[in-house]
Image 1 (tube, rainbow, N blue to C red):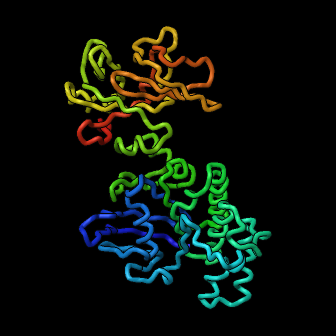
Image 2: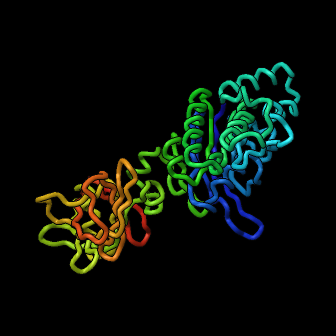
Image 3: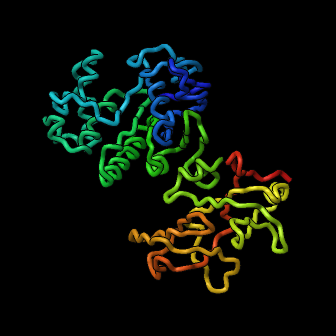
Length: 370
């Protein structure tokens, strides 16, 4: 396996459209790194640049110790798993697994051994004589993984490999990919638009928007300290609630005035308090995750008034969709003693879990050093 380095990698099309803007990061040997973002954000374009299927306008791409900008895809020592499986319909599973090795002139004994090892690892033994049309979607995806596996490449590239599967198969195949990565200690770059896949699979996640990298970090670091409102609302299901208002100061301390008569008391840490005091009277965005809000308890002061719009019980928990101060909130609650639609409630919240963002730039407000 090998490390991968991207240094100011850029893709500009003939019409001037910037598909990827100056992407720079390192992928360690054995790391599973996920590229995530909405459709059109540039994640698949970036993966195809690494694969050699898309030309690089500028910047440097290094795999191992070798700069591969001008190296053909077949000579980059990578294997790619596509969204649509790309299996040969007239070939058996065994022949699909072996085909790439045969093209490269791999000795017959090595081909048979690698096919045997891959089929055992992915539980494909009984499927080897079958054609792709005889397989389920999940089985076809395992064959596509097996075809990459037999190559024994330096880097595995996976382009939304689970998007064609139903929810149950996505879960089971996701687990298989995670197990496979642990067994192989492989370097993997995984593209998805599904933030659940990103959070559960990635050692680190690269969040992209409009061709630009927004943030790179571990899943929980991204969840707990998003760098801007886009990352804050993209990662997490349901997404983070964002309350827009004016920062005011009064007898009870700092508050976010959402509307006339609706104010949210704030309790920022001391290091952030210095930053906020310089913004009195200015617009501010405060974020709260659904799990950091709750129906106010008896004796809990300064509750936020809201009206229940809909209740979504999903088994082990429920989501309350609320109208509050002209905006909408989602609250994650236990699935018992639920309020009814139309009911007015007050919300408590965990002030220590609040996120603060600049209204204009939508960037996270950081704590000032003492």
